[in-house]
Structures are given as structure tokens and as C-alpha cells.
Image (cartoon, rainbow, N blue to C red; front, side):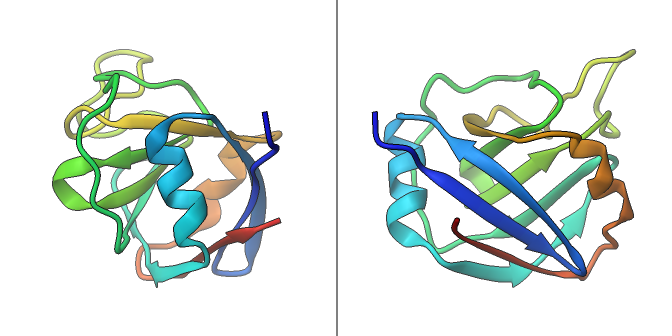
Length: 124
């Protein structure tokens, strides 16, 4: 497996993530760099991409630190805690997402990012 490590810069903050081997992750990797204005939804940052992909092993509930693609919005999503759709401690996207990677280290640092911050994803 080729390592697909990415750097995500949101506002003044940077985190690294490792992409998996799914077709969606490879599509994202091949489309980098991606830059967009980020929006927040609870403890999730999401932003539009030029990528168009179908649902693939899509999940209704994700794990802390997951990086995912949201097919209806053609958006990348970074999850670092509950969203308005969550019940209890779960992390629930607006609708099913394709999980394509995981943030390294403490994903909760992303709580500092404000809606409207510029987000850039590039190869690390």
C-alpha cells in the first residue's frame, strides 16, 4: 500500500491525516491540492470539492478523527466530535459518508477553526 499522507490546513491550524485505499480516497489524492471555504456543523468541518463520487461502504456514524467524503454535497468532512444529528456520544454525519482516512493525533484541535476559514488539503 502506498502511503497517502495529507496535510489539512484550516485557518492558522494544520493537521495531518492518512488516506485509506478506497476508490474515493484515491480520487481525493489524485485531485489534490484542494482549497475551499470551510463550514462547521457541530464538531465537523466540511468543504466543497471538485470530486464526484458515489456512496461506497457509506457509514451513518463515524469515529473521532475520521476524514470522509459526503456524496450529496461533494464535500470533504473532518469529524472531531458530535454534530447536531448525533445521539448521545456518537458522531453522526448529516447523511451517510464514505470514510477515506483518519486524522493523526488529537482531532479536537479542530474545534478552534471557525466557519468561513480557508481550508487547504495537500499531499504531505
